[in-house]
Length: 337
Image 1 (cartoon, rainbow, N blue to C red):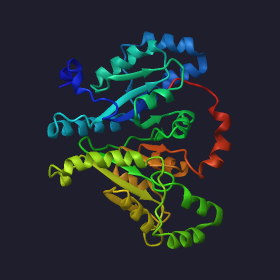
Image 2 (cartoon, rainbow, N blue to C red):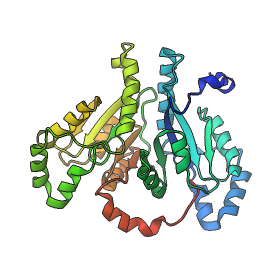
Image 3 (cartoon, one colour):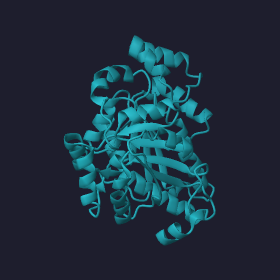
Image 4 (cartoon, rainbow, N blue to C red):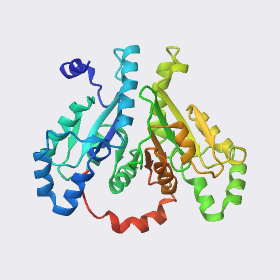
C-alpha cells in the first residue's frame, strides 16, 4: 500500500538497481495555462499564480498514462519478487522554483501517483542530476534539454501532446520504437539521405550480416527486456505486463533482416515487429495503442500524435540537421519545465 511505501524507506529502490525514468512536470501534467502566464507575464507572476492555486491539482499530461502503466508493472513485480529492487522508479524533474513544489506534491497525492523523488532545480539544467540518478530515460517538453541529455549519453526524448488522447491499457505497458537512429545508429539513414532509396536497399542487402551499431534508446529496450524476463521466469510470458514493438518504415524483405539480426545479437527480444515499407505509422500505432512511441523523424511523431498516440521525438542522427536549422531561433527561451 501507499502508506507502507511512505513509512518503509526500504521499499524504495536504490537508483543503481532501479530503472529510473526522469519525467518533466510539463509532460506529466498539463501546465499549458501556467506556461502561458510565464511566457506573457514573467517569472514573478508565474510563481504568484502557482502559489495562489496550489490546492488545485493539475490535470494529467501526455506522460501520465505511461507513468501509471509503470506503476502497474511495479505492482506485479512486487507480487512476484517482494524483495527485489529491480523496479521502475519515476523521478519528477523540473527546473521550477521550489515554491511550485507544493502544488506538484498536492497533484501527485490527488492522482495517487507513487513519485517520491523530486528534483526542483530553480532554473538550472537538470542534466547533472539525471546522471546522479542513473537515469535510464528522460522525457521532457524542452528539445534543448533533451539534446543536452542525449549528448551526455542519456536516453531522452521530447514528448508531444496528442490532439486527442487515445485510451490505453491500464494493465499492460506498451512501448513502441522506431528502428534507425532510435534503437540502432543512423548509419543506414545516412545512406538513404545521401544516395536515395535504391542505394539504401543495396547497402542493406550487402551488409545484412553486419550488425548495426546501437542507437540512443537501445539501453531502455534492454531495461524493459530485463524486466520481461523476470515475468517469463515465473511462467508469465503470455500474461506479461510489458509489451514492446518495433515500428519501422523499413520493408521486411529488403531491409528487415539486418534489423532483426542486430536485435538478436544483442540478446533482445521485441514482441512485435512491424515493417511498413514507407507507409504512414499513425494508423498502425492507433491499433497498437502504445503508452509511448519513439521516433527520430518529426514527420512520424506528428503523424502519430494527430491520431492520438503519445509520441516522442528523439533528436538524434542525420535527420536532425535540417530541423536544427529551422528550430534554432525558436529554442532560446528557458521556460519552466
